[in-house]
Amino acid sequence: MQGEAQVDYRQTEVAPDVYRIDWSIGTKPMASYLLAGDGIILIDSGLPDTPEQVYLPALEAVGSQPEDVRLLIITHADADHIGGNHAVRARFPNVMIACHRRDVRWASDPDVLTTERYDGFTSYGLRYDKATFDTLTGWMGPAEPMDLLIQAGDQIRVAGDDWLEVHHVPGHTPGHLALHNPKRGYALIGDAVFGRSQLDTAGKWLAAPPYDDVPAYRATIDHIRGLQADLLLTCHYPVMRDEKAGAFLDASVAWTNDAASFVAALLQESAGPVILAAAIEQADPVLGPYQNPRELQWALRAHFEELVSIGTAQHVEHDGVIAWAGT
Ligand SMILES: [Zn+2]
Image (cartoon, rainbow, N blue to C red):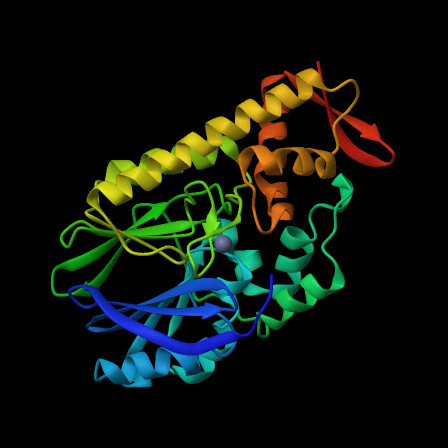
């Protein structure tokens, strides 16, 4: 992880009254969304300076005022999606901030998010270095409470009879949300699915799909496919339409199958218990290679845990850390 937010950005109307703003953090591509209707809805708050550097000019470009922003929907609790929550509240006096119940603790407090999510691998023998923690800390402003907790089945009116349906799409985080607009044929899916890799700004493979729960992630891919949206809008990938969206979902499933096979074979072939660091090292050339192999920690742990839950693997202690062995 690296880099400062780049303020150079591009604003595109990807569907009627749906504005996508492309920007980047170092080589990490970012897409923010502004929905214009009876007032303005923003999707994710980005970093602490995103409200000022990205959303204010975007509002101006559509002829709206800061007072017109009525809702910020947090797709999920990750630093680059919640970091600007406090600044959004400060900049947009009429805003209400919403997320899913299952992400609310992380989305409301960067300290809790850091301790429980980013520093959640110590018992597996892994911990980010100080520079990474400093980067993540720099991506998040002060804690900011939510105003609304939303869940699957809720409906949010954009304008007239134009509504967003709220969908629960866990896997990357437990409370990840997607917003489907059936009338206009688009689905805003945030970081719910990842294909075979997260990409950098040049389209090169950056890091593995970071899901934390295999059955949930697989169900999410199916769920999003079932929406049959013509237009798939994510936060870190180019705009995808029709066959491209289908191919992205296919690649997402294929990668989970490859990761599952890899983990099962690794357990079978290992003479002793497997620790997460060793699994990452062996997985990277097979499933990647990735610029940031360490991020394989999420999916690999999830696949080991899936085997534990079905009884073909077990936890064992190895040099003071949690490792896995066959049963
Ligand atoms: Zn994320």
